Image (cartoon, rainbow, N blue to C red):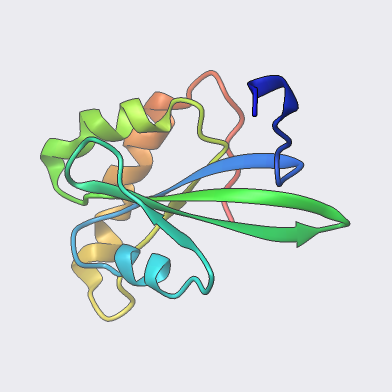
Length: 121
């Protein structure tokens, strides 16, 4: 089968990063996805899963990336955020320290996305 004959099994592809300190539950969020396929990129400390959802009659393929929460991976997060349509900041509700760390991660995100529109929920 040639590339021209291949059809996509989705209408839209969205790349979303899960960002936060170590051990806040990013991996557990990915583990909770049923029927998602596991994929590991070349860089250690990062992994992603893909899943397809139906939204308003369109098939949306989500790539959810679990980024390491270690500070040394901040530059890696910058490279993975290129082409990302969304970032979800994750913290552990039982750990105030991890919630306080959200400010640091938000600053990283804002720095990388300064020319793009940000939305907080």
